[in-house]
Amino acid sequence: MPLSYTELAEAHHRKSVRLRQHAYTQGTYFVTICTKGRGHLFGEIVVEKMMLNNYGNIADKTWFDLFGTHRHVELDAFIVMPNHVHGILHLSLGDLGRGVRSAIRPYAPTTNAHEKILKGPVAHSLGAYIRTYKSLVTQGIRSIHPEFERHIWQRNYHEHIIRNETELRQIRKYISDNPKKWEEDSENM
Image: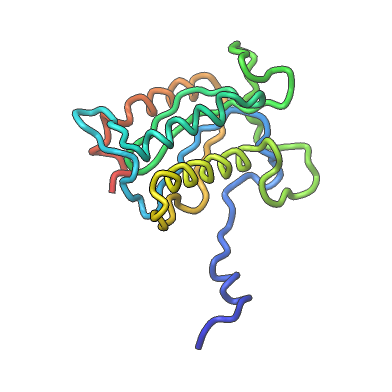
């Protein structure tokens, strides 16, 4: 017997791993976005270096075009891998925004003053930016291959709130070393 609409909605509901009262509009975040089914769409690792194909070039260019020109976002380390991307973004809606590189970086707090639970991506939030990025990459790929009908991205994304300079340095190193450690990477399936 087929499931009702309500049963289908409940079956596909996933519990969010996001902090319930954190708007994700300020702070420093490490983001991983995976392709659907971990498909190798963006290129391959050759002698411990990532070699981007056309789709990988779109994913790379879109990251810098979208985030590099937005006044609320400061770019940091980034890499496109065969089946995922890793990046660090510094988000700020205040005067400590783009271009400020000092010890007074707005690291993300663990709580937020919002009293209500936020539903869906807030404007200028990490979720809104990632949704836009995924959409633009999908459009870019389909613009060169209109017959490409499969989903490109896995649902959702993984984010980690970076809380201090030590953690930031460790994550930058992880990103830069990712191609060298591809054979050991759990994302390499």
